[in-house]
Image (cartoon, rainbow, N blue to C red):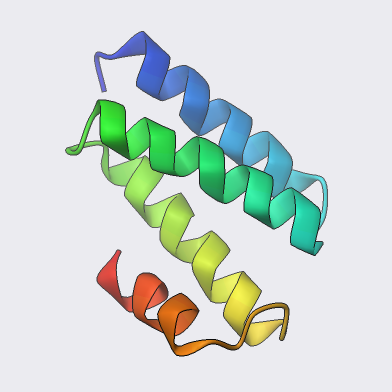
Length: 75
């Protein structure tokens, strides 16, 4: 991406993800990564990391809702 705000949000999202797969850190990561893709919808790395976060939430049984599973697939 050429959008520095999107890149900053992406890096923040990755940092939250790296802190550990807890409900709190993953929700923070998702928030930052959603901001990154809002700022630059073509930012593939942000989309990929966002899908990874949704997947981790679902498969680690932090949120087994159908909405979470759909969010995982939609990214």
